[in-house]
Image 1: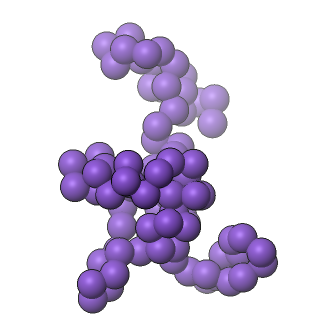
Image 2: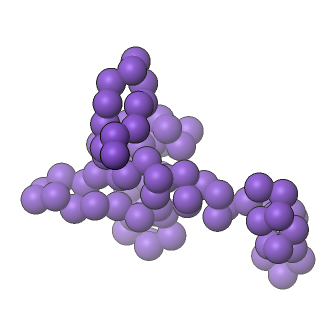
Length: 82
């Protein structure tokens, strides 16, 4: 299934720059998070890195927080608010 993103073009996956724009982060941050393993799930197609829009949306939903510090986060409340 194709999703519509930016100027009405149909896409099934986004390049790193497009994914960074979608998330509101820099390409550098996205690349570093991929190397650390704490960023969104990605696809490796040959030498190209791609991001599926549903994976980006799922990763963003998982970043919801109720507090600055992890030990006081009420993640159940954050999920319920989504």
